[in-house]
Image 1 (cartoon, protein in one colour):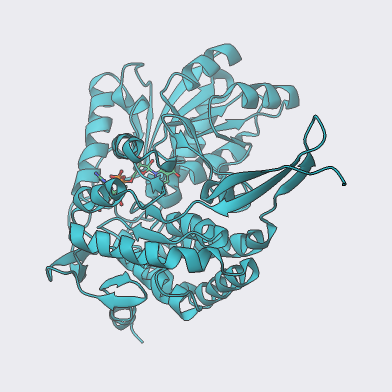
Image 2: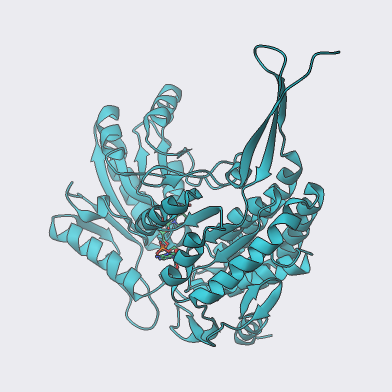
Length: 492
Ligand code: NAP
């Protein structure tokens, strides 16, 4: 089959309606939402465009399914996740192609994301049967404490476009494992991966109504009534800090449990005592994974003066050599950014830095023609007031500054309202521990340019969020703790 025919086949293979109560149905008002390929700007297909009434219908289905799902044996919940993991794993290539078509990332990265997404299901299949409780004698004797973990209840799950499948399985996996039903709303730009996932969950035997998928061009209009309705008990959101803040305000009204995976502004620090080649390898990963469109992307590079020129030269050479093109083409590393607004934002940040005195070592421009491409870029001599060090770039641009002392770089690295991840390269063990502890971030990549792992607790502090996804704590976000005080009568 030719690539083009394969592309059509994977797009055609996805149900494009709303998935509510185990059935595929069009939006109540019959509206459709176009989905575009960011590399060709061509319309791939259209999906149902839900109205607020459709959102409430999805919530109705989740609420109706909740009691039965909470009572479902944990082992069977786990088995459904395990089967879903296996089905995704069997279809990595077609799911990866679908993801590349709607999001733009190169096929190799899409395959990586599909495998990563599936791994959350495998991990939470294993966690489903490890929800434990407690039994204790009251400190004064006599009474007993029984502590149980129960599902939070119907949950609203909202995911961004940059990781269209993994950000979903990271929420759906623990929700299913914990016994929570959900309504998931993927980003309007990348709904297809989530719709494909819904089909797989159904095939794996997930009962009707446990997971419902609503695609819409009116995210605010559809989500707010679901939050204000009062029957949902949880919101788990991944996206920008601005939208997260707005949703937190709405959730306050209903006192909803919330998990917030928000924006980042990761520092990447290289000390003089680091292995410079390893640091360049790590920088390539931390900067170019997902074309720089990752919350974990290294946003600011701080290199100690003794190795600054060597690091910058080697890093700029590697950045310049990356093949750019459509994600479906063999060997491409840099695909298109998601849309023209993303390119405009990157352009504005680079231009602002250059106007204030930054030097372009490589890149620094868009690519003419169809598709939203920006060249891998390395900037040096970054002025402290440049917007690029305080705003999320979300593109393949690396601003490098130099520093002299550990204290100085810690002050600069922590000088941000964000606190998702920080990267640190050093060969000194004491410094590694000292700096890892002092960095204000939920995660630290120590001599490593990538931190994501389903078995590890992912999440941020400060304006980067609340709560953790993955690891042994990931399921806690979907569980309430219930304590039963037992009055024990003396033996008659
Ligand atoms: P976004 O604009 O905040 O959108 C995220 C999701 O929220 C999308 O599904 C979006 O739908 C929806 N949304 C937008 N406005 C909404 C509203 N008023 N009410 C309810 N839902 C609403 O973020 P993005 O630009 O897609 O994603 C990039 C951001 O996500 C970056 O800041 C990145 O750092 C962050 N992110 C964080 C993590 C993490 O784990 N910490 C992971 C990945 C990404 P529509 O797009 O359809 O409007």
